Structures are given as C-alpha cells and as structure tokens.
Length: 380
Image (cartoon, rainbow, N blue to C red):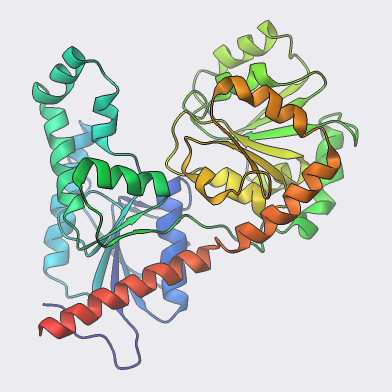
C-alpha cells in the first residue's frame, strides 16, 4: 500500500517508460511532464531501461533490466513484468506509465490501438495476423492490460475515440495533448535566425518555404506533399527518414530539383521553423504531430491532415488549415501564397499553442495524480 501524500501536497510519483530521453514523441512527453511535476515540488522516480542523466536531473532513477531483445513485443513484455516487480516493492502515491504495462494508476496512451492496425488487413490476413500469430496475442494482451488502468490519458481526441470504440472505455479517459515550450519557440526570438537560414538556401523574401519535420517519411505523408508543391514553392525536409534515395529520385522525377532541401537530423530545429512560411503535416495516420504545434508556437501558418491528432487543436481558417484527402493539399498550399493570410493564421496559431504548453500538460497530469492519491486515502 502506498504511503499517504505529504501534508504539504507533495506527491511521491513514479514515471515508467523504456527510454527516458528527450528524443521521440512518447519519450519527450514523459520527460517534459516529469520535469513539470518535479518543478511543482513532487518527488519523481523514473523507472526505465535507458535514462538521459540531464533529462532526469533532480529525479531518482530505478533502472529496469534490459532483456529479451530478440523480439520487440517480448522485449515490451519483459519490461512490463520487470517494472511491475520493482514498483510492487516501492510505495508511490501514483504511477504514471507511458508504456503498456501491468501496474499503473495513470496510463498515457501514445499510439493508435493495435486492433486498428489489424482492422486494416483483409479477412484472411487478419486471421493470420491475429488468431494464428503469438506476436499479435502478446500485443493485444499488453494493450488489454493497459486499458485496465484506473485512469487513461489519450494524447489526442482520435486516440480517445479509438479507446471507446475498441475497448468500450469512456469513463476516466482524459485527453492531455503533448505540449510545446513557448519560450523556445517564440516568434520574436526566432526572427534573427530567419534571414540567415533563408540566404543559406538561396531563397528570396517573397519565395514560399514549406517545412516538413519527421523521421518516418512515408507514414507522415512526404509522398503526398512533394507532388502538391506549386510552381516556385520550396520545401525543407528536416529529419532522418527511411529510403532517402527513393525520395531524392522522386524529387527529380517531379522536376523539383533545387526546390527540395533535405536537411537530415538537425540540432537547431527552431531555426528551420524561423525560416519557414508554413509547416505542413500530411500524415496518413498520426497520434498527434508535435511539429505542427511547434510551428504554431513559432507563429507560422500550419496545415494538417484531419487524420492527425493535432488537427483537433486547430480551428480551421482561424489558426491553421485542415484538409481531408491528399488531392486537396495542392489547393491548400496555393492559398498560403497570400502573405496576409499567413500572418493572420500565424498570430492566432501562436495564441492557441500557448494554451498547449508542457506546463499545461504537467498540470493536467498533476490533477489526475492527486485524484488517485485521494482515492487511496479514502480506501484506507
């Protein structure tokens, strides 16, 4: 049984994730919200296989063994089992897990349901992938255990809807989106970097630069974005995506040579937001899409496909643009040639992004952890 919360309102919290590092969507969510909880005076213990010491500064760390790496799902099962054993021996007021596990009070759901992936296959393929696949059994088992958590946190509205559809779970399911650091992505602070970055690309002030940020080019829709570029438009691709040769050939085939700039992995992503006129996320499926929120914080016009989770935080025509089908993207980009429209969207986008800060996300999780701790006091 957990010890009661301190009289001063501080909680003893556990944060569970395989890799407590500042790269990757779920990982960054875990790090930023844990920092926010620590800054509010709570005690935070990180249970992880890999920990970035700088990210965990001020927190206690409980290493979780790294074993059974020959299979991704068995690797996940081992982590869930080992983390649960460690947690069972240590009282915490609340356990916040970012993984599919066995012992959590607040489980943050970062991805679409495994059942959704199975549903995309035909009947015979589903039979093979589901009923005849031990790998699928394990995935579904871990997911079902995650859904038993007292409190679920979906990182976007589409994830919340999936939880309701596949698991008939509607109570105690909350949407807490990823956040953004408004100070780091402040439009005024970035202006100084804009001119230099654009000169490096050979761009004039009146040339439209679209920014794509992502490490999974196909899933995030780069195949749809490239042919949607209009005459004279430029595209900067930031991220180390798969099949780079394929995309360079596609650029040549589309006659976009000199107008598509592959930056690869970068340390100064904020400078690329500064240089851009618009940030586009054409993902075919995306639980959220943090690049759009960061673009909004930078005061840039943003475009997102409705299939992305981040589209739910955009008010179409006010602080960004949302579209449905790939065929619509070219027309949407054409509207952004209007600098007055970009400025109007960008100003409203900045205001909207500030409401989705990492501080706001940490506050939401803090409230849920207090509810868990209070419920335990009542049981005692």
